[in-house]
Image (tube, rainbow, N blue to C red; front, side, top):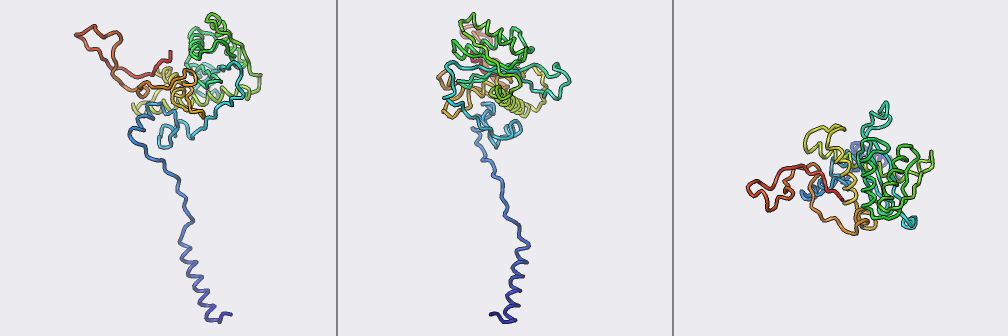
Length: 296
């Protein structure tokens, strides 16, 4: 048992300790800072079009926000013949436009279920037009299929395009089985809708990267935008590795990507075509802007 004087000293000691703690703060949890990249890593990341999200890259943070995990398709769900889905996308929100003409030129998005390969091309208009049909046929031929399902929603414009593509592929000896997602069921067409979101994020990142390097603000109708939209999909195909350790392009071609590239819209020196052995007085090299590599 404590005496009165001992109790008073004990209580005073507790008060002094509490007074000291009163000036202390709670444990501070510091957000993990991203690892600073090397100069080579920065160059490779910019050249690859920011496909792989990096927390140290301000372009990735602004354009994508968070790292999105891309799950591969379950192999047991594969069909005997692959399904290629097509849909339209706009970089302008449909809610911000008073009518469809204000949405800008549509982007035709394609996705192959078996390989995961994607394509995005700016087309003059929705529905049947020669350029849209040519790009669809071109992209499907590069997949190497002789028979496939071509899926879309029930919007009249995309259905008309699908039928025109089917007729054009028949001339190439490629059989197309049309497929439509049920009306009013967005989950049935969720596969291509997820791809649309991924393409839009990649387009934003390429645009932000280009603007930051050139210190300009790009308009949606700038002549370089169609090239940028197409390159957005190709960058995903070439540099995004799936859970099987392969890229989307590698699943189609069976080959890894080994071509040397530059950052999109970077100024480069290029060798003029068919200049070897000719024009020995004139220079054979000239300046240009890098817009990507055509798969075809």
